Length: 451
Image (cartoon, rainbow, N blue to C red; front, side, top):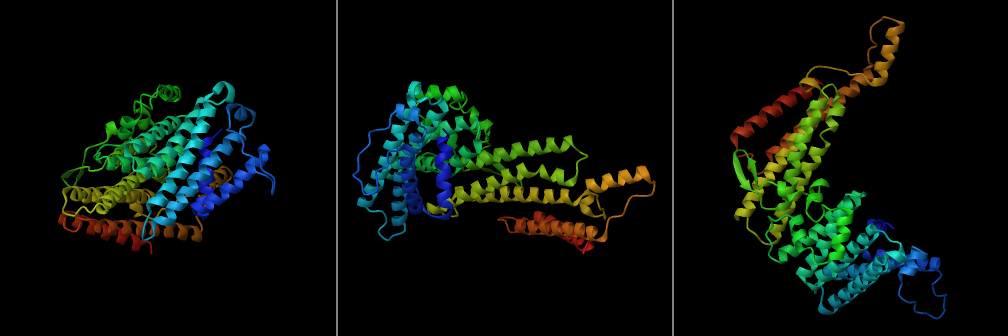
């Protein structure tokens, strides 16, 4: 039934070009279209007749009833978010009456989502699979979590988002992992972290660990359904397999220029563990194919660049959160994060420079080499078979193009080196500053050779 895809596609299509109010308007039109398909729409200027609750028999007869329930729930949710967004920037903020209206709309959305879960749970009648039921339960948990968030009921909020996280982690291993990963990263994980912060949970505890502790193990039916889809979801094994973060292998410290500091945020630790894993994979990858072209070798750097960028983003987010809490720069946590920031940025920039050096060729492109494309090499091979004259020289225009590409790579490397100099603590490190100046001179000389 693709419940999650149906919801996320509707949200994305509306929110890319509009806001929650636009989404609410679109949902009203889509609801009317859904009712017309099912033949239950009220006639124009006709008397309204309240329809009964949607049952398992209705869903078995036509899956459009699932979409009808989802659209109804989404419309109430979108209205709540629209009201919240409209009052969030006002001078008075969200007052008691407005907050009650928001909670009322979210409660309406939660009731509709619960109706969907109950209808699908009668599998003998509805024909729903375990995956469909889990997607519906995860969706309901997100809506309930949003409602508890507005009520400031942090323990219940955390429990609801924990259910959705564990379910989506289990579903990630069965396919369509990118959809669930985006939902986890953008919506669920930040909500879990905020609720945990309100409950005075230390930042050093990873989100997967928080979710597993908050998960309601007393719900035997839900536990059985999750184990049926992925037995490792509740034990935490699936987090490691799906790159959602393995808290057991996350490092506690990070080293920068002989200084070892404690990692203050669990997300940074998980991201740094991914960096270490990507390093090992890159080394193994490059060792296997030594005869590959520079472009093929450079493509192997994609994973390590993504991993280091994630570590940089996690560090920036942790620093911003502490600043938002009013933590002073002299605080030991902030000092550790600043050193961590320099370390992860240095790591990311170093791999960028390494990738550029691979693309420039052997000896950092110091020698003028004009590699031929596969088509040209094949043409030369065919020509040799007919005529034993030497290989065809590349045209001047192609040589100039390759020289421009090499000069652009040198420019990128020099810009990266300047970025390193701007990192906190680098200017005070005389040894490192001297090396960076030497590298700048080296790549500047190579750049001017080909100008």
